[in-house]
Length: 169
Image 1 (cartoon, one colour):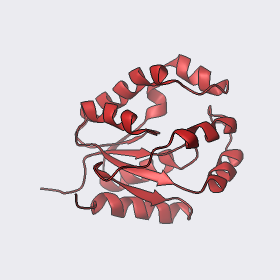
Image 2 (tube, rainbow, N blue to C red):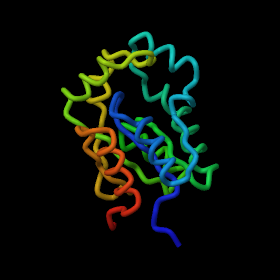
Image 3 (cartoon, rainbow, N blue to C red):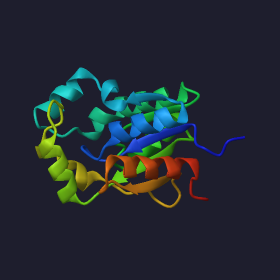
Image 4 (cartoon, one colour):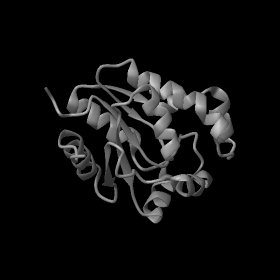
């Protein structure tokens, strides 16, 4: 039996590289990939595009959809911010075996990345609100933290290694 998690959430703030790393991880592991942004209701996307942070009430139905996407698949990688412990707990309500890969970096690195990004609904002005919400993985949560202040290939390799050899506990 494989020890590699079968339901993986690549998490972090906007511009951390969730979609890029998630796609690479899914390809390497032969899993399906879903971007949780695609599971947001249109009202959430419009709110964020307008520069307004989501409330928890906005997030609950979306997080339930993320949990269902994980639970309904045998092997899947989902890119999802999952910023707070309570959000990850909501996801685990549907997919208790979810493994979280936190993509983390210094705020300056993230600000530079988001400023350079084009064609994304999330405006750079909301990054600080996400950083304020971010709660790192706790010791009782299945997952690993990856520093994204490297080349995309280095980050992808670190994420693949973390998933293929998850920390004990």
